[in-house]
Length: 449
Image 1 (tube, rainbow, N blue to C red):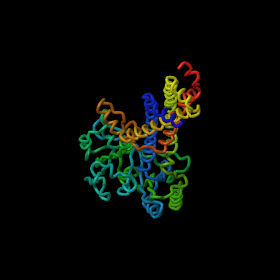
Image 2 (cartoon, rainbow, N blue to C red; image 1 turned 180 degrees about the horizontal axis):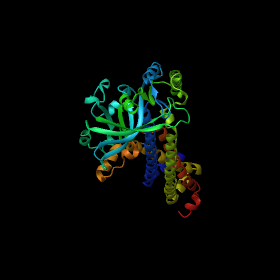
Image 3 (spheres, rainbow, N blue to C red; image 1 turned 120 degrees about the vertical axis):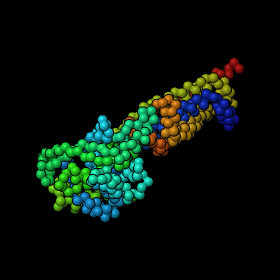
Image 4 (cartoon, one colour; image 1 turned 60 degrees about the vertical axis):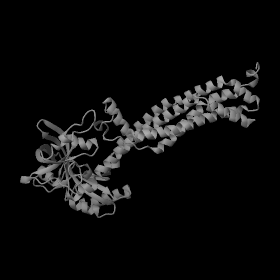
């Protein structure tokens, strides 16, 4: 008799269309949380990985106002270790770039060395003209009368269309070969080596170069702010009469190398190299790009937790919705429940049926939510493009969100706990109706039947 009661109740509840509302509620809530967590986590990962991808894994940064001379010897010593795959020198600065009459932009300037730079960062993939050129043949161009060439971020030269967030490539190509003027400056120590408390002297310097190539990395900070010049030419122009120098050494670690162990190796090589060369060698900063961004990434994770908490509170409406639906079923079908109980079905069995259906509704909704969330996340860029085309509104702009593409990788580590929370919420929502059904007394309901 108990088995008959189970079958009757299952068939009855399966025919109730209102149960589908609870399934839909669980599905939408799970999908919302999965998409939110996946997109935000993908954004955090993209921020963290982009620094390592474009800057290297470990950085050696000289104190302000001094430079690392004879960096070729340092790089050779670093690359001789098993921990380092490649290293390159960078001379950094800031200035104002005049790329056309009336077009002045503040920029960050990097003096880089080719082809070493290509072994540390994916610069070759980002070039407009030399994208298909073998790495060993990529250069700044051959210009007459000792003039130099440079590479400029695409966002420095032009602005993307506000609606499509795309650049006019014909306009960009018009800049190739054109002269540009960079106004920058140098901070030089008063003495040969900068001692603690010394005040550096600042000197204005103008660098003229030709635009040899345009860089498109897909990262807004690099595309909209950076100018790349030959490091030796930049060093010669900024520090005439001084040997070529760099203020940063960017290092790419060998695959599979432990980061902490590699940093210890790098620190040992630096100490051995710099001990007899620089009085300031102990004040150099050696850190990984992950350590450099640790505080920013931690703040992003805090924002993600707050966002999920708010959406989680909203999604608790699942409990109320399931409670109302199942309670309505209990109240409208008390006679059926009374008949089943009079035929021998116990109160506990009746309660378990409703709890089980709450779990089943939650499980089905969670499964649908996983599918919906994964599909939405995976096709988020196509959806964003469709919205832009339909309404003329660019939802995702690289200048605002740092990247030209929306990260679309599902964060499976969060999918499971979100799904479990959806099932639990549906089960809790069915708990009160289950108790109400269990307390129905057949005598009171069937007295006048």
